[in-house]
Amino acid sequence: MNFSLIGANILKLLQQYWQVFLLQGVVNTLKLTSIAVLFGVVLGTLVAICKMCRFKLVRFFITIYIEVIRGTPILLQLYIFYFVLPQLLPLLKMSPFMWVALALCINSSAYVSEVIRAGIQAVDIGQTEAARSLGMNSRQTMTRIVLPQAVRNILPALGNEFIMMLKETSLASTFFLGDLMTSYLLVGGATYLRFEALIIVGAIYLLLTYPLSQVVNAFERKMAKDGAD
Image 1 (spheres, rainbow, N blue to C red):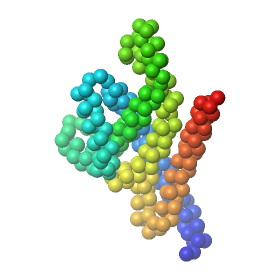
Image 2: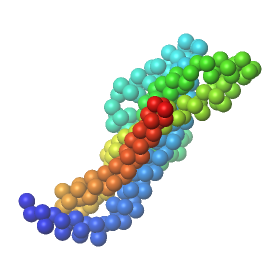
Image 3: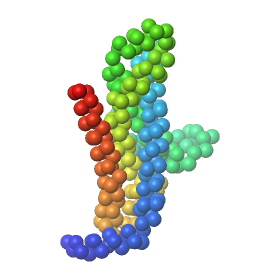
Image 4: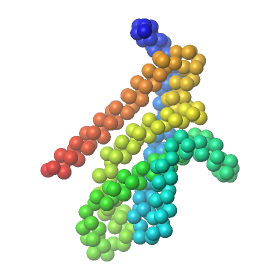
């Protein structure tokens, strides 16, 4: 293997296609990830609250929702949202990008809901009892007392979810939505330098995920230290 030639080819690709890799691939990947995680957290919070409600029927359907999403491959879910739902719901004028983002959001919510539920249950029950004794109703207790304390417990897990979703967006390349893996397919197909293009995309993914993972690890260490103190 000629490493000098590979290095030269990588530099050549970066010079010619940096806009495809960086401006298009990175921006679309981060956009897709941010939409999926942001709305996944909002929906996941609602799912977690419903999972803990006192109505058995609600808990039953929420449990089915979580198990179906977590028990089926994410690629299958993407196919359903990309090919099936637009035909079943033609009045929803959504772009292919938004259908894929919605699929990732639904997938993320099922996992995030369990993280949030665990974070809520980790809050001392005495906090809830104290709030109720002060005259707060269930909604006020949850939004003003429990959730703010639960956020500290779930932030590291949400950071890991963002990192996981950042990598899972690579499946969007199946539909050529302009993410990083789509950039690899386009550049590799145009230049036949697939190995070099793959190295560039892999390095970009690493540059995106490694700092995030270090931030999450630092936050976890700080929480462990505060807990020990």
